Length: 350
Figure 1: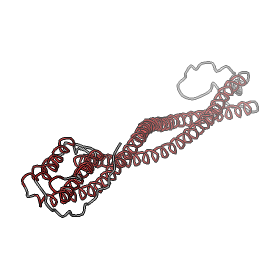
Figure 2: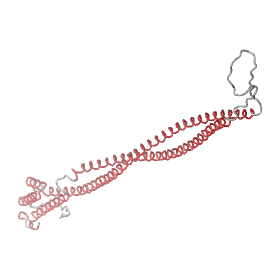
Figure 3: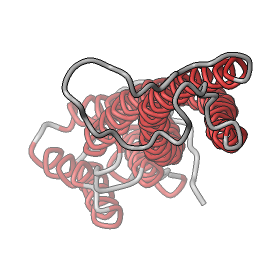
Figure 4: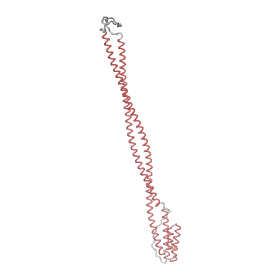
């Protein structure tokens, strides 16, 4: 256990009849204590006492006591400063270590989030491009289909109009032919005589057309007319359905693009925030690492003055107390010889 002693300054002792016996007793005491305490201070003083006048011995011992007292006060103050400085530097280092650990965890999370957002944005970009390409392709195909349908309807319409005119003309012809002569064939004529094929009716007989076959011809034309009408109707119906499907596709595709656009906007904003936070965390990490470096440097600088002193503060304090006790004992012996002369009758009391 550490011993605590009060460093006592001893009042000057008036030398009277100091002898070599007193000098030798003090010298012997200091050498013995010097060896025991491994104190070069005491052994050096013992050698000096052996050389200096006896009258100066008191002054040497007194000065040494005062020196040790001052050293004790200074060292106590330095120990307080060392303890405080080491504690503060250690606290800064430990706090910075915790911050670095926390920042490393945070940065690992942010790095993973950034990579995930990069992948998701790349997927969104690809998907949106596919949507736009599909829309462009659908527009091209729809345009081609629309042109083809328009041409089909136009051609069918033109055919229908032509057939309608033919049917109307034939219908009028057959109806009027029944009531009046349309053609008259005669044999009397001027000019070279030409043999003509038999027309199928007598000279002067009115031609009324092939009334028996009129229904079949017009019927066939009516079938052709209905084909054209069906073509127009089916084409227009198909065109209407195709246009409706195209509109629905564009609506759904546009809705999908809008949703993906909003998702892309949100993820880009999140990516920007993540990148900013990651950059800020890196800056903070650099600052905390600098704090750790500074604290470690300070602790290393404190080590020679506060730690690497060869002895602990407690050990130095204990030895210094023992040295002062030995010096006080020497003062006591000196007083005994001053009072008792060469015999030093009161030395045992010291």
